Length: 77
Length: 253
Image (cartoon, rainbow over the protein chains, first blue to last red):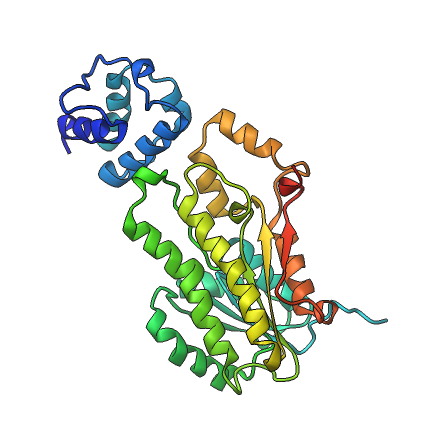
């Protein structure tokens, strides 16, 4: 799966309009980025990329690009 | 010396017997003198459990409990070769973590199938004449404190485990005339493979909070096994339709 496609799935789980989520979007500015949001993202990465993201690693993410790095460096392993 | 927890000569079927709580239950029941039918999907892993049992006269029967339609004939075959059962323990269970908006229907259906539907089908097969000991027998379901106390991301699993409690209460009444007692054991977090998988999905902070919710610390599989043995033994002969909470104080708060 391409990063762009995954980004659109992220927009869906964070319930923001299509095209609004960019790589430099700050996670702290997203209403849905809380403990449930983290669980939703873990479920998404598990389903779409078949990887289990660590909540500790996700908590360190500041920007959307940090999440993508986490997902796609792991997915390519 | 009498031992009211003795299970000498009792025949008991245990699902989920290849690992975790189910395996510990099978081992303890055998140590208390029972002959055990071990049930799980993987025959190789079952054989490993079989090697850990005390005494002789046990059976390892691989079965995918998701194949609900096959349970009646398969169960009848076991009775034919192994003999009438004194007990049934449904410990097989699966858990997926997902908040409401991420729950997949297929994951939810599979959880219900293994955790709950199979419990019902097994009880139906156990109740049949000549399948259970008509003088005294028992069914124990392994539920979870998830059914009593919410944890985000665990709704479907919690519901399957709550369903077991409701099932046990009703069957206790229906099956009293057959001298079959039906109870649940309700554990909090016990160190098993399933629990380790769950823990990896939590952050350090969440893990610490979860530990703090267990005043006596996380449980060992044997802690649950002891409760199951108690309910199946003579010591539990007047107990039916109840839930035995074994949780290190988790629900005391």
